[in-house]
Length: 257
Picture 1 (cartoon, rainbow, N blue to C red):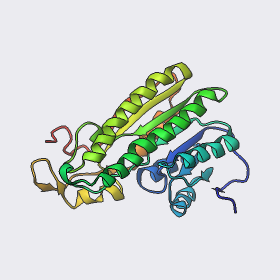
Picture 2: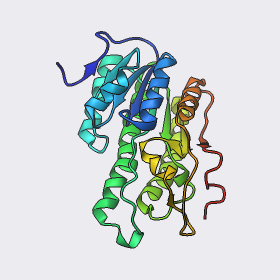
Picture 3: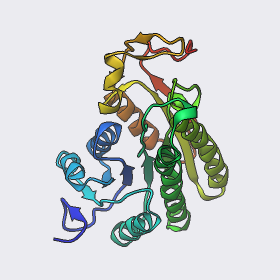
Picture 4: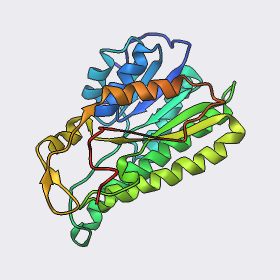
């Protein structure tokens, strides 16, 4: 068996999507929603077994394990994608990590770097490679949707690395969006608040608030995030959604702090 596992023996023509962090959470749910909408979905992440579980419910899926923080791994991923399909129509740039909550004064530099490596450097490496492929393919163009966060606007306590990287994601989205105009590449960002996944389970048990209280927060079904991504992906490239916020209605965002 080759390094890259597939549910299909030949490349399938049509719309090609790449989802990073596709082995769990929002990545898995969104990849499956794209599959139901008729996309051929390339699934990447570090855990091949988890990616295969995601792929099992997608008609046209291709599993390509890769660590987005590894420049060579990203280069190899896009080399394989280019060789197989010759193009990429959609990137859902979703891989991310929250890291260990800690006050800024006590956060080890290694913990800071591990979050920055995934959330910012990894997001950049994947977006850079996708942008280059979309720019050069024929016909040219495509769409990149970066997974931001409510933390791209306001931080949670003890989340300096995560919040800093998500604020930086906004700058990445704006910069790529500006450059993309000349190449029919639409770049946007979806800022998600309290979608029910493994990462947000602690919110239903009680989580530290800005005023020092521990409070349970409402969550929403992550399927609503997935359907939103599918809708944005269905728009013509002449239409962009630069920024969108989707969140559980009652979460402490508008009044956070």
